[in-house]
Amino acid sequence: MPAPADVMRQALAQLDSTLSHNERPGAILLYDEAHVLADDRGRERYSLSGLLAALGAMQREHQRVRMIVCGLPTLSLNLKRARTYAERMFRHVAVGNLELDAAEEALAIPLAGSRRSFGLSLLSEICEQTAGYPYFLQYFGAFLCGRIGLEHIELADFQRVEGALLHELDLAFFEDRFEGAPRSEQQVLETMARESGRATLRKIRADVTDAPNVDLLVRRLIDRGLVYRTGRATYDFALPLFRSFIRRRRKLTELTGSVRSGHFAPAVADDT
Image (cartoon, rainbow, N blue to C red; front, side):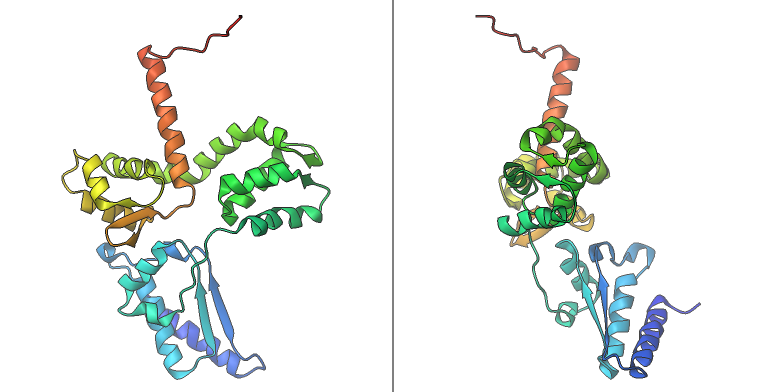
């Protein structure tokens, strides 16, 4: 059985040959969620290395095929690990959250072609909560249109289903990623979530005192795609809004613990 790199090289060569016999000047391969493509040295699986080797070999002869890959910040690290100087094969462009105007347009323009509309205050609230990340803009918009049977939805309508929305988002996107990490790694994530921004390795070490090797835990979180290195000994969450999820989760855990221990005091209405 031929090696995966050889298979990919043959496929790219065939694509290049096809292009050379028609009027098309070239082809661009577009890969989203490319951060999930990484070498697994433990299992001797080198899918990313093979792809880069095939692309490099083909482009040394012809340059009719180009590639664009897009993913979370761990993508750059995967590329560097897969192949020496792999970053030189690509022009890196940082694509972050949308600015307020662009985020509002991302919601309003699709709605303009339907019979649905969102109030201005609702648009602002969604943009603020999602921090302008496209996936979450889509998620919030789809949830509201699916759950609220109104042609025009206002902020008050959103607030009635906000708890259900966040709960479903947590289960659909965050919970499995958090639960998949051992408890020691979860402690690192919880420490980082208490920070308003990037966390230093010194701060993480100071807070996670019962773990023998915090540096190793951070590296494992990077390998899981949950954390990435932002600078010298500083780290941040690779998943957008992951910090907010961990904070919500911690409050819920604390509340559950209070109820089970009998220390929870329900609110009492003031009749005065």
